[in-house]
Length: 206
Image (cartoon, rainbow, N blue to C red; front, side, top):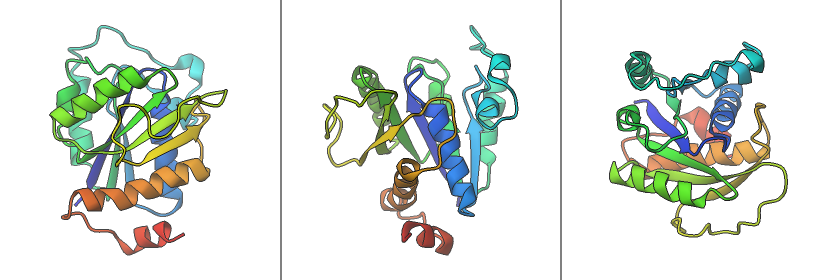
């Protein structure tokens, strides 16, 4: 059964870079993984994957009624890869956000320095919909973060990661590997119906 994980967080925190980096890392390790930009308001993934230049990136506004939203959600829902990553829009007040996360089994929450208030709102959103948050990811962009573990007001029992330089470039490094391994090992603990494949076990064991 596919495991669907959404990545949420405020604007500009590196959600899309993390989503594409996790996808690229897992695929390089022969893990069956799908990637979906559930956020219909831009096409960041195409730019990150080198399919189009950043200067041609589409940014839509006032598109709440765009029928593309329902199509993107259905594509995320129907993807039959073992692992399916969904990249959400950056506003927790998006009126379609609840619909977007309906297929999700779990979430990863991303935030940056100064973004703890936003992180608390996203955490409340996921908790209200009974979507377990597998990990909190602090996106360090530039200077070293002044935030210390555990991040204030976020559950201490949930794994916390620092990922550096989530700045519009796909990363395949130890930071990403730690988040990926956490993803592969945590969801079965959250949902006992989810099994771990032999290939996943090999990746987790290094």
